[in-house]
Length: 287
Ligand code: PLP
Image 1 (tube, rainbow, N blue to C red):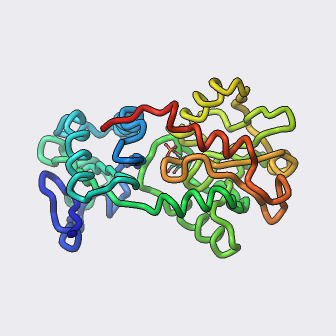
Image 2 (cartoon, protein in one colour):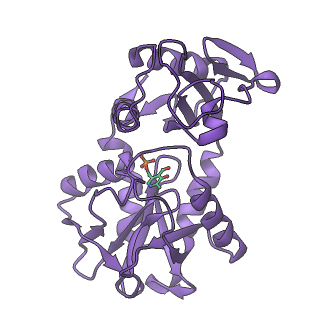
Image 3 (cartoon, protein in one colour):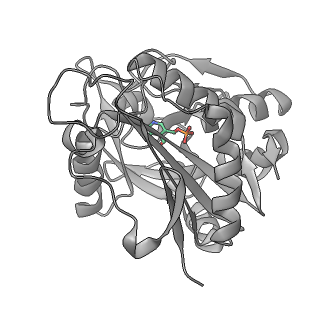
């Protein structure tokens, strides 16, 4: 089966789908994006992701020339054409193609660029990974001061993830100048204390307010687990009973080691796994 990618109004063969050299996404990362999980053919919490996309666009003063209401149709068609049952869909909007200039181009003359692609992922491999858990390392958070906006300016996160990989870990937890963990390079960070309370950084401008994070909060309420939004230090994390990360592509992924120090005897924690397994019961599914 040949794969296709939607670029500005047409579904192009994967090998031929291109962006203009002077697209503002390539020159300035003047673009925002979303990633939505696809589970058994359903889009998970699609509306929440589209609402966050609208917020990100608003934060960078980008008003696309198309209605965001068209996006669910393109998503659906992308999923259909690429026959994705389990995987993800990626949506990116940039400020369009214009002669390189830091100043915004005239929006009347510069249509926004919309890219959408859907891709399958190995759902079983993710489950196996969750049962084993992942290792994280900690690194200074050197990102810009607005990671609450989901922009494609991800170089600091790319470097952090690569460093993690180099040390045999799957994620880097980033800490601020006071030693508090903000979030992961591409996920939210959570710990669970001895009282089974879930702790995660508050949704300030210092983190991306994850849609999976919100889903875990809904699930926690149902399980009558308390969650607390407050910063926690690396030391507190290392003393935690359990830890996990959340992201649309990873759901709830247990953490077994922080900087090489084991948590829960280096095993995936029971509460984390329970949250993972019930997550979809509290998600909004779109056919
Ligand atoms: N934080 C960062 C920096 C991310 O890049 C992501 C996802 O890519 C998340 C958190 C998790 O967000 P979501 O649960 O909406 O995927």
